[in-house]
Length: 454
Image (cartoon, rainbow, N blue to C red; front, side, top):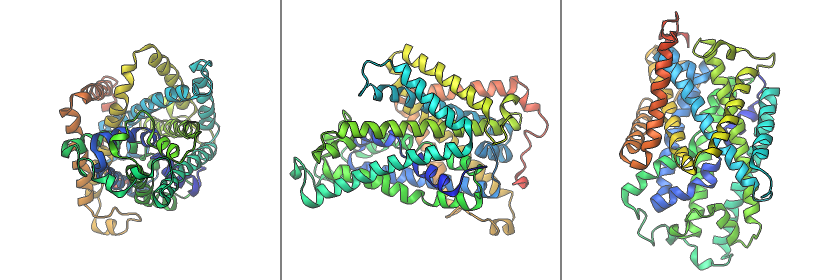
């Protein structure tokens, strides 16, 4: 234990604000045009129902390992095993991308410093924060989130000032008519809107850490609901409102991705140091992502080890609850992975977002299905007694499940996602083979589906 309510709240707040918003939003806008606003709203609804499902289970049974343990309880040993390792896989992929990104961003100020120096410094900072204590992790994430939130709010306020007072170098380009004047609200049709789903869901990836962090909270029954209930407002404010401001200020075709949409806002205001300012914010966002992803992956793998679904050495923790061996193992993997990224062609990075999305929505799907299964084990009286029941049961859950399955269909349909899909499915097959080859399917009690324990 060691995370206070403010830590959980800020972890929830910061988990969805990362490079996916600061840089990935440009690609989503190019794909869908102004209709990208609807994509963010739909994706946000999926995230909300998923987190409410996770919140209901986490409040009822806060446990190290979180959703990997819930899927094991309700769907069996294989499901818990795959979900936990898929989450760890997702976290490692995102960490690799963000580590390399930090090294590139630091080159803005220190072009002559080797990239490995910044990678080493980053790993030392986040590694130390995760190894010292849970509280230090929370404090570091708290500070990172303040920087990210301040940047988004500054962008929204600056954009509103441009619109209200006709500021900037080209005030005539701004206006509400930017939402429909160039090809309409759906300039690329339904297909363009659908193709933006992958990038938008990638931006929301990591929000499920609320369930992992909840197990470390001093008062889970209070902290988790408060954190989860802020999700709708966070999505509306930090995604929908910020993207709306960007679209009102710039014709959507001018948002090419050559620079972040956020840089364009500050440049329009005449802030000449906009690139340097955003560099600070993006580095902070990447540090925050690595910090929280390392924390989440370590806790999930530790919980799995206690259920004999991971090497037993990984279940050991310090007196302060820190899984030292697991965290160090993840840090070593990250070092090797970054070296491999430097050695491989740059094409590797083109599939990172799609591959991370595959892993993310797979975990979300398992959380939702586990929650539906958990409800089948509850009597009407037990449902009535739930402290944090999901809203719109069961239709909200069915909507979220259908949306995720549809997204998998997009990856199957669009050739550009086939590599990521193949790698994701390959990982599933590999881990399934290991599950049976190591005899974990024979461990007594592991494959028992027992919803009554929750």
